[in-house]
Image (cartoon, rainbow, N blue to C red; front, side, top):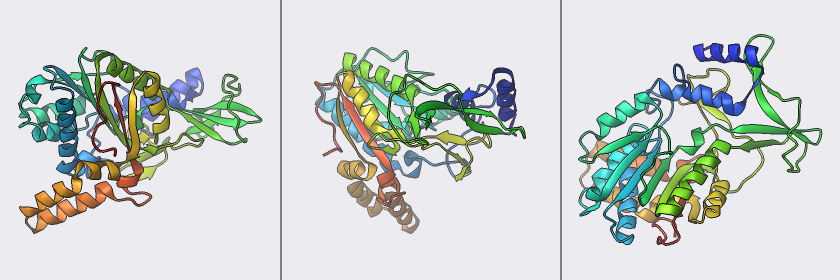
Length: 357
């Protein structure tokens, strides 16, 4: 058992079984042993790879998406550019490089990165040191500038803790993490039902609720509704709310048991884009999508951008660009182009952003 697993086992021994939401919070964010607090999880040497790490084309197109909106907003003199969970800073690096020749934009920008990991924050500092734009860090979204805001969230919501409930004997019971008699972590159900849940479903059905993500979405939407701007959420997930669980863990690019190695594996769930859209609308925003990543990137011109890069490419670079284009837009059931979805949200006075028609 991992050191964090031992700590969680002791906690359960003292307090009893804990919610999946609390378990995920500890596994990912524990100050000493949490997965995101202790390592760089990205790339071939890590556990997973994100779209910005696959190709510069992804971040460049997102940068042009931001520049286009700033121009159509009337080029405000002050604009907050916020990224949630910036990874290594690669996306923001490409965004800033792609927009450096947009006259007046960088002078207007106030760049804020929301990152809880001290390891990744230091990598982001190094990545963005030569960007020419001042960058500030926040540990959460509670202190965003009172400015029109462009928000970027690529693979952020999938890593937020969720709760599971299971239908048994016509009642919902919360799924908990407890201790097996052999000492390992195991799932079980709370004895007392959750009477506040009134949804009808057959026995055995699992309900996955991302309440932390919903609160963050509500706060972000309220911020944009008050100060203006728009947001872009890109993640793997589903376009329609449904019963069922999507909990998964990745270690060294392979799936593992989510309870097997807390603190040493990435634990995520699929994002419920329909629910996020409802929350944004409830705060008074307009939404675009959700659509697939393939549709969105194609609408922004990724094929044309790839063709431009190929003009000056040698054989190795040609192979790299062509492989990246396929990987980002592949529309097989497990391809990033279809598995990843894109949701746009905007103030009612904003024009519809590019990429969704």
